[in-house]
Image (cartoon, rainbow, N blue to C red; front, side):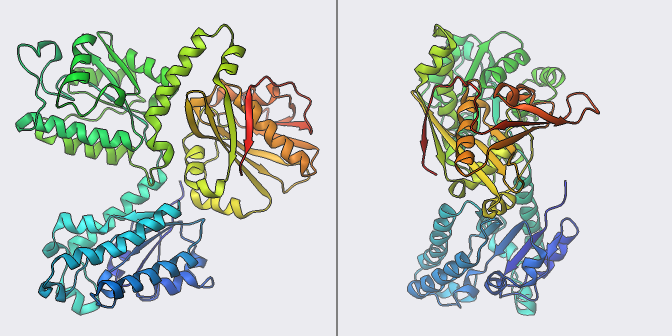
Length: 552
């Protein structure tokens, strides 16, 4: 994968940081420092010629507010900075803007120590408001880095007086590591499912022996270590990580603790699926993956038993199996490391916040399908409503769909926010984004199509749909909606492309089923790419039961 070009802009000297980063990634070199807004506001600047994919703005608050430690004056200067930045920013680029740590000599003699925090909060408030408005802006955790290191270890007056460089050598190295970590998070596809054992994993001791030897789960000693572990996992779940249980236990004993123990943080409804039985765990994991309609390569398995970990590694090599800590006091930090390594995302979307609920609702849909007299009857009972939504307002979700969808993905092109932002500005590209709800709840934004209209015949270059809504004939309604709009715009033909991968075989015959005829393809190898075409308006008969609403 091609290395991402980045930029480091600051109002203080970051030259040494840039030099260190240049050995790892291509980095833009600004002329001097302190002109970060001027660089961004000048479309002819070398910054735009360089065209970085990600820009990091590391700001020193004392310099930015010109050492005016009056709240009202500082607020005016901070508001002006964000106003100028908002006017200069490009919706197709990714920006990391640091939160701040107020460091200057005069804070030591402030009679009201709370003013330092209040001044930092002025910046934080404006920053959080910007992040809420803009999908392509993230908060860079500069302040946390300083707090972990400690002010005396992070800042150097000697370096400051020599060249307006506030950070010690150690802090500069830490800053470089943090920047590289954020780049890694931007580029990778995060895991989706954390599969957990129970005994000596989520609590200490054995569920079946709880009457004789109470399990370890409390507000002190080792019991608190397990409770803090659960607190970390619950926060992960609230940010979109799907939790499943895979435990060798008597189900009744385990469920009694899950539902009734006073110190349980995770409750039965925290889990998207459960397998509490005596079967081999790799078989249970395979079942859960099928139930959730997710690939095993999206799973992380955490179990205290090395034999269970080894067996899962051997039988299911796609599943990530991290080591388990030796001591209870290491549990929470070990899980934090797992989150950072496998699950952390650049942005947590509304889709992520409701993911467990959505998968629980899917289980109800599956039950309805099993009980329905026919597939047609099931689709009618669902009462699905499809709404076209504005892709400009949902860039992050649009990016997720193209980078996380594998099964229903006709061409498997991967796009970053910058590429999609450029497409949204291109009048020759039409991007359609769809949200679906039904009688059980909101499925969220689940499908996207990109149509290239630059040639005589428009082409569907990309068609993706979340696996959680596959098997409901939604694709019939979606493609018909696109066809109707293109026909209304004056086109009488539409083409679609299918490029096979190891994972998208479920849609290999999609276009023929939708009434398209094959017009070309690559026959040099088995399952090679195909191009299909249909006349508009299409005369194909499509069996779907979806009400359409167009808001975009």
